[in-house]
Image (cartoon, rainbow over all chains, first blue to last red; front, top):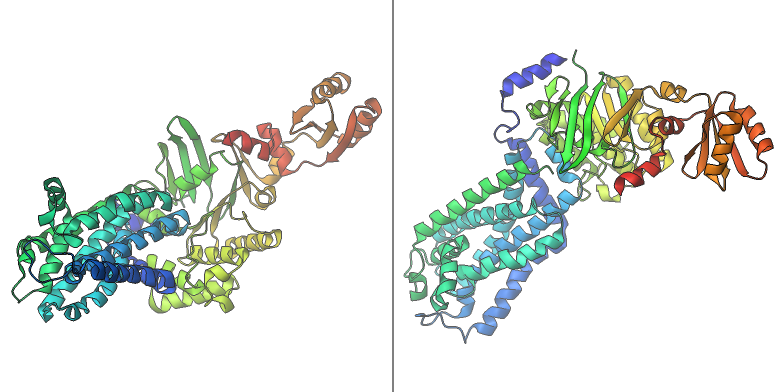
Length: 280
Length: 313
């Protein structure tokens, strides 16, 4: 009997505690659970998608004629706000998933996962990929509306848009995990949401361009990683076509893609570290 | 063969508070062992250390020879855990919960399906497999927990307060499952409890009090450690009557939880003598063979529930 035990130990070497790589079967089942739960909770399905849609239609319709981006000639607010709304869909999905994880921790579900022979990194990956899938699925529905709003969206642009949404969604999901694993109640989370997550979105160029903001706000927007995600999305909508002047002043496409990828990687590392330190 | 659980000089502090104090314990393979103690006695902290969720400040714990701190993965593979709070997902069906659990342990395909069928049959939930867990009664949900914890065929089962929230019928039924598990599969079982009836059914009981393991023995031996019978006297003025009983009969009458407790051989004779001697002071007298609760009072000097409140304060 003890042979099986010692065999295991020898197999996994000395640092079994810092558990050993990624167990894809665990990642897959945690991912699957996120999807199933989402589908079974109608309010989440409608909430994450309908809220940005309503924001976009109301703000877009209300501000369309009064809003003029600096240097922009003809594009109205409906078009300006469009990539911002996609970022909002990704953010809201991450927020809903984060609340669900805080609830999982208050219940006992995650204790059961933490005592399984699964590395902490696998748990983070399963949860954040589940959330990313939900976010990208809803983001794609919006992206398909782009031609209706008048964007010259090319096939290459749509593919790059998909990749970008995946990176942004993954980054925001892991940011949500970092918060969720430090929170003991959903009440505390609302403060974080209003003081950190929503301002991060508002100051990403999603809502208004940096060009019209005061200098300190412009600085905040320049260091906000989400700014580059939104900029890349905006440029992607015009991929292969001439860009309007308010888009031309944004950070370069590939710089933005690079910053977004880095944002995703850093957030994943931070979430893995948070969960490793947490005792559940 | 290594013991199922070996705890050596385990100590855990939360800040200044010592939750577990230099505790050592060995549970043999195939044993059913209960940690009995009030809330705040340190048994939950102990449980979290055993289940690898908490790294202790000092000492070590080995499960089948593997260290919980340095060989957590081997340890996690060898045990199944049933927490006090449900760890099943109420939104998923019974079968989905089991399949999810199996995949965490890298059980898949036909093997996973057959194990799920086997476990469902074993806990009598085959016909509820497709129902979501939130539609099940508390007793049935607890059986899903058990099925889940056993799916990966652990050699050790850890249960934290498994009877809490169950009605007496469901509790008896759950304990039957545990006994059956040991008989058929030789699974070692370690549980925490504050129910005397539950501890009574175990092979050995460890009594915890203020972070220390004060006594470990079989329920029979613990009860035998109480000298003779137990006579409990209700009276208005306990300390006065206690003194007078001591003077007159030469026995110690200890005030516990609003009554005087006397441990004595041939206690039934004392009942008559007490009523004759103090007809105006004695309100009621009860006499009984020692229970596990009496043993607990005898060893710790207080009732289980009273102790709980003290610790919590």
